[in-house]
Amino acid sequence: MSQENGQPVVEMKNIVKRFGTVEALRGVDFTVEKGKVHALIGDNGAGKSTLIKVLTGVHTPTSGAIYFEGKQVTISSPADARALGIETCYQDLALIPLMSIWRNFFLGREIYTNLGPVKWLHRLEMCRLCSDALHDIGIEIRSAREKVGKMSGGERQSIAIGRAIHFGAKLLILDEPTSALSVAETRKVLSYIENAKAQGLPVILITHNVSHIYQVSDYYTIIRHGRKVGTYRKGELTQEDIADLITGTREA
Image 1: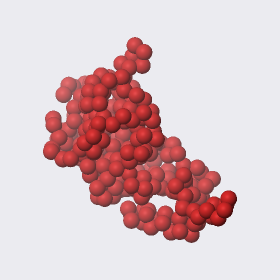
Image 2: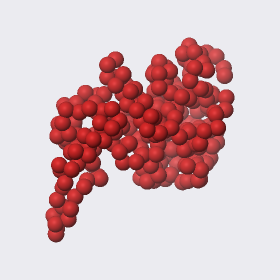
Image 3: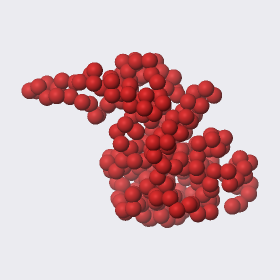
Image 4: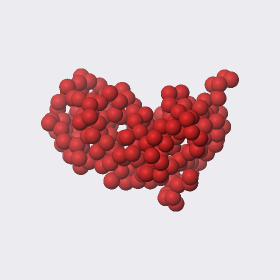
């Protein structure tokens, strides 16, 4: 199935990735449109993580091309990906538990004034901006001064998502964001994804959970054994169909 004629933010064309004699990706095409949630699904070892690592500069593709906002790009490192506006929230979230919410939110992007050899941090301003930014996408926190280590898994996901949106991400990648969360926490994270989409931010959602795909994704691409099985619109297949395509019980 081909997607509707939306404007793509990223296009990956004929991506091949080999590790020695092992071919992890075999000519995969993958397109994400602006303002859409696009799920990337497949069993363990299917190649979805390798595809995302190619997109985020962790791996260099053996062959193929990547286009971002219509221009061909070379992404040689995670720093290159971030410079383009690609933000990734991994399962470990890259948050520091002993630091406050606002310190994590502005980590590496602190607002400060140079006073000679001393950097004066604008703590109150960063606390306020952190709270306001999270509030704008439907995330309420008790205090920006609270330690991240005291927060639940869903709340930590909210900080990572809010941070990406605030600092102008053009594409947000979420790696198994609901893994090991309770039902209530999962609902919150899915609502944050919908809020990000409502603000026009395209999201790649990597997940094993077919029901979550059904709730928030506009499209989903299924990968099996390093090949793309197909890309489908929300509602085009049943949950049973999706599960069968992932496992290879049925063919596209």
